[in-house]
Image (cartoon, rainbow, N blue to C red):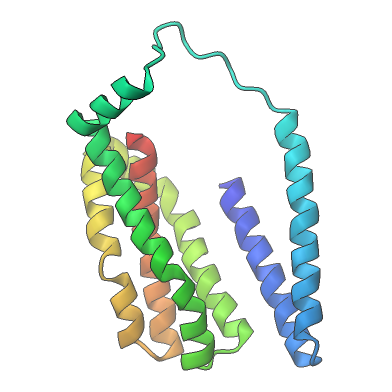
Length: 190
């Protein structure tokens, strides 16, 4: 939750800075400040990562050779799950770069409305996760993964159908919940 809230705060801060830069006809300077801040914060992250150590794995873990790992992936449930998660991720990340230009250039949203839409998705994820955790305990992660896969499938098409801001906001909230379902189930199953 802390990570998701921090991401949301960073998004709102960057969106506010972009809106401020646009208002005062300084969008490139606003982008430069955001990129500089992102670089500095990544260096801070590297510092903390170097201070973090891995715990030693439990004694019942086995080291598997690359060939044995490939065979296991081809024959076992792990391989099918990995291929599924990679396929969904690949398609989502292929489509994701088109979201921003569509919202800003085609629908002519300003930065404030765009940030509200993106923040709505992240907020929905943050708020849905505790409820989804209880649902995962009751249903199991495999059923939750199936529900998440079905739920995220129509989300990109819905953006095309809804051009009004309030419809987009509603669909972003639904999309955030759908992705929270999928991501939690994928995490629990890996």
